[in-house]
Length: 265
Length: 262
Figure 1 (cartoon, rainbow over the protein chains, first blue to last red):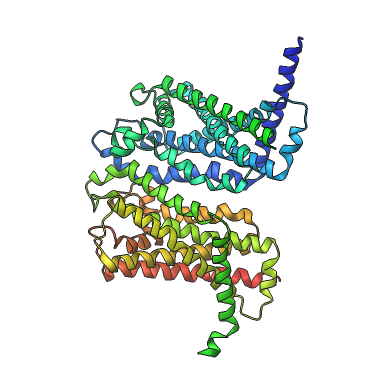
Figure 2: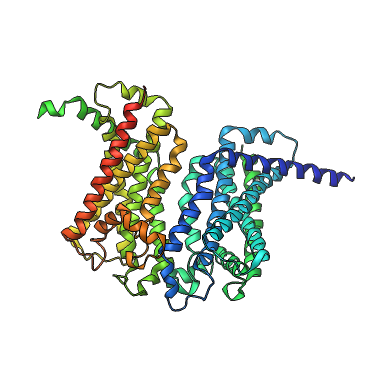
């Protein structure tokens, strides 16, 4: 094995170990699970029943089930929260001193960021599966089939990396747990600036215009199209491109933030 | 009068009230998330579901007018639930044990923090109202309607505070925080939050009918919704609901407090 391959394998083990650690912490502390797994489902239940009459509005697309139509909004909400949780856990590690000990390890700095985001991928994938299953039990239908569901899980996980990158960058720049916990409401701004629960054509005009510039718009519509097996509801490739671009850009941002932290400390 | 002002109970209530307000002054930006969250929900919900007013049976054509009282209640409820989180912190750190030896009835220890929460809740409730009015919400209920809205928000904050305190004295840990907040979330949203009762479908219609918060929302909506004008018929059910919830959660808190330290 060449030296480069050996280094790559070692860094891969570091990323996997840190990813496992962040997942196990998540499941060990129930208070972290509540917002990421339970809150989106509660909102789904309330919105699906509370606004189902909206299906009768002119311009609402013909869909198999209203619950199935709003599930993509819940998936994106879950991935936003999973990403935010990554930042919160990062800040907790910084405040608790664990991150300083990691810095003393003979590993590439970027692996420390990627390890945290690997945990986010696992958490988001589990979340999306959980949401799809619970919604199916309550009557949601996914005409897109297994392929559509697998693609939706992948898009959700990639989106969580994108949000996790932003949250990790903030954690690395500020090292403040309370600040990360305080930005919770701002996550919802991103969600509500996309056609998460209602068709884009039926959003109020200001929001409809703003949603064009939100990458989550393309992701949520792609998930909707994939689950419904109906390309008229969204463009899967545009969603993938938006999620990929977000993930790459914010992972780079987090890596730069780490470099900046090391330079200024 | 002077004897009343110097009664130990009033002194303790005043001290704990001031203490809960100092927390807001000392922690920079402490009120920011609690204020921004309901405003974001107000804007987001209006943006997403604003077209629902086009449905037959929707009493107003201004969706933001329908949602403003909901967001006021949400903000006030979260401010109330924070009382439980703060109490859980005091229990964990041992401070509340010292309060328990004060020569006053245990119930008095709850009054100050609840008053503090009600005072704090005026900030998000007012912020939501001002943002709503700036964005076109109507105020057909006038001064009486506004009074009803603030009574609903303040009393709901107190109820949420009692719920939070009950959770705190039961679990004695800050880890019960999400439970306190999500209890408030469920209470507010399992009601006529998004649409009137007639437009609710399935299980939510039945739950909303039984949920006392539906009546509290109606009390608050006298301020902003055309067709729910200030009247005894729209006020009485809300006040009864608030009194009932206050009695139940108040009794649970006292029960929990009585068991503490035994």
